[in-house]
Image 1 (cartoon, rainbow, N blue to C red):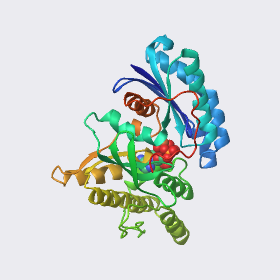
Image 2: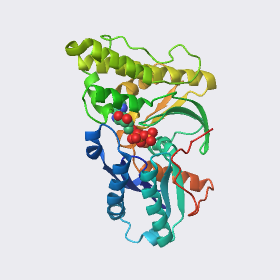
Image 3: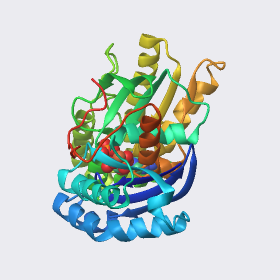
Length: 336
Ligand code: ATP
Ligand code: FE
């Protein structure tokens, strides 16, 4: 059973072939980072143009790499991201997938991009079984879900404003560090002193699972203005990172206490963050085996199509069926 995954929700065009259940035969990601970098963020119109240029060639290369010479015979499912994301970007993947599905007579499935991020962990860890908590930390989302079973998700809490990845990107922009900001800040933070600047940890005392990163971002902006030439960029990166990660870790602990579920799977681009990974591994390590933390390998944290193929495969196996009538939905929520 081979699944072709297609992902084009934001600024990465990605195609993968997954062999049931967990063997990634090929996974290609074409990043548009260099096209968007001069603008300090993703330009939607540019993103859809780049997807359109890239997608069919990427499908062809991926099938070739995966040893699929006769897709009509060999593929059993096409899974494509149908939302959430940028409409113009989503449409390119969805329409390509629909065309291929009809031409090859292969079933198609529209996949939620956030469920895809969740499935990065399912792909990487065969022993991960519901119920578990899922922390999704990406460029557009910061949310905690309770996974009661695959396909049954309950939102426990989310950000009230910016996503954590977005805060990384905006702080990096203020400091002239380029786009995307996460990896650069993560790297500089290692050389900095996190005690140097005092920054607020959002919703530190609140008894709800909730996040906020716009106040933290503004606090950084004031600090940059106040310090002027005296500013130490590595120290600021370390201080910002500590506050951001502290808020994520404290809310994971709160969600564990509220639900009694002590297994957490973390995914999305910010799951690549060293400090977050270290703090969560420490949490598991010091729990005497009670807390379990699952993290995807770095290449499955950021957008890729293997995770989309996996989400589609698992949905198909639990009986979900789609036809060509589904639509791209830029604001598709994973759970209520
Ligand atoms: P969404 O999935 O919400 O639609 P997206 O797909 O654009 O958003 P991802 O590709 O999952 O987001 O993640 C990209 C984000 O992850 C960027 O904001 C980037 O700065 C951040 N990021 C990547 N690596 C790191 C890191 N090491 N530390 C912190 N942030 C990181
Ligand atoms: Fe994403």
